[in-house]
Image 1 (spheres, helix red, strand yellow):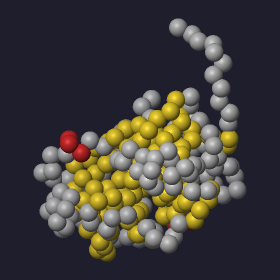
Image 2: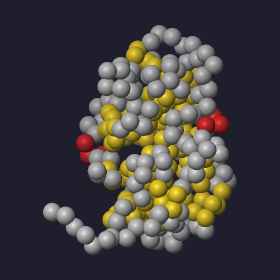
Image 3: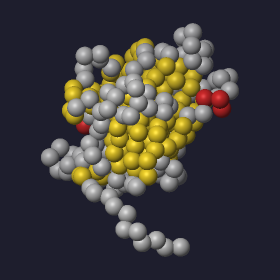
Length: 255
């Protein structure tokens, strides 16, 4: 399992909308999408599963049903399954966003269907810019801001932005009953996954399947900031988010 995967910006030809598939599993598909100046993603279409964007660089113009919006950097866009939509770039710099489809459709399911419909129905789409004063410190030096939860109508994924000050850390080594992903926005993240240690830099995706022991902290000189994606978010009151574990090597090896 390759736990760290980096976006290869050199691979984008910048002639039109391009997507790099960073992860494709049962819980989600994770994509790094680049939309150059004047380019557009596919015309109005729908997906059989939920989709979200988190704009990292540039500015996204988008239509959801018949509603038009502009999403700047550090803005979440949540698009429930079946919502007609498309996006494009009218700005003067490339627009790059973190993109998720969840849950991942079965191999025989059509992922995208063009449509002329602009009907939203009662689907609760969401556009949520990051608020400078919206962070809550949950551990010393570790703060988070929740942008998408079950309470917003998202049953398959939740997303929050975390900041980790130098010397700060998330919970000690633990496991989840759900898949978790980090995407590093700024700074450098140090991690332990299983018995190995890793370093994730800007534009690195960290993949943490359910049951894999892990922990993360900030050894660097600057604040580390990342997206955290849970797929799915635990049901309220039914299961803990984190279960602490102790890892030791037994010394027994097999060859």
